[in-house]
Image (cartoon, rainbow, N blue to C red; front, side, top):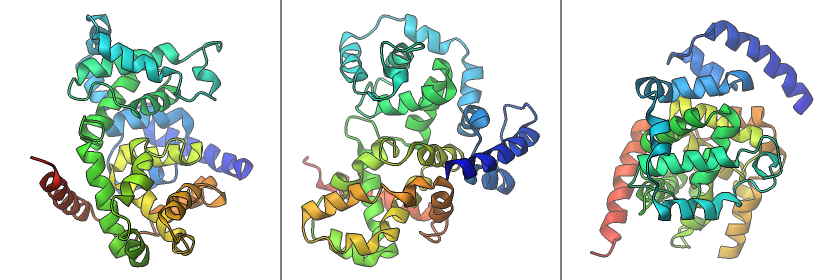
Length: 309
């Protein structure tokens, strides 16, 4: 698959070069959306993510801001919680091992520390280290990674990483509602187990499929995430569930369900990123943002109503 896919990527790289023509801006239209869904070549990925997410505009508006955050007096508690997670971030990736050259650990620490000071309501939350690490691998630039994190956590995925994680909890329940209509048999099965969606998909959403799906597939998902927004996360989840519906329905216990949801992210179906990405825009069917917004409002209200006063 990789050898064939390499030929496809080379052709796409030429098309992207023609389209961008050295510009740091990406238009929002059907042609570019089609290009993004087919995959952004590695050499253009950081530029596209920066442009599509609005991170480029923020960096240009505040060119000294990131460095000012690193120069300020640091919160000792913030530094401590970040350090605890440093060795857990991609432990098998040579770029995050202290003996490697270059080592990205310092860049990762700086980005997380700067973001913690920038967004005091969030500070640092587990899962953010993987997000920042992925961004640094792609951009190879601390400042760009910081502004991309700001775009993700502040605009594309609000409240995912706040103390109460209300956005994350809401989207897990939204997925449950979508499954009821898109894969009703699975919806009936899952209804037997209260709180099941937190158990089986919280890692999918909080890590944005990092270390859940193959690397190239995750990068393709992130291309669409930065360009089209958070709706793509639901398309991926629904595709995995619908495609594996017969396997899921064989589950006879809570443990069976949890194990099944680990297994459905592996194998040839998710490894072939090109085929998989085609499926996510077909398999779930029509999924307008208006539907997501309405479900988010409903689920958020339910979660708040159930919280102790």
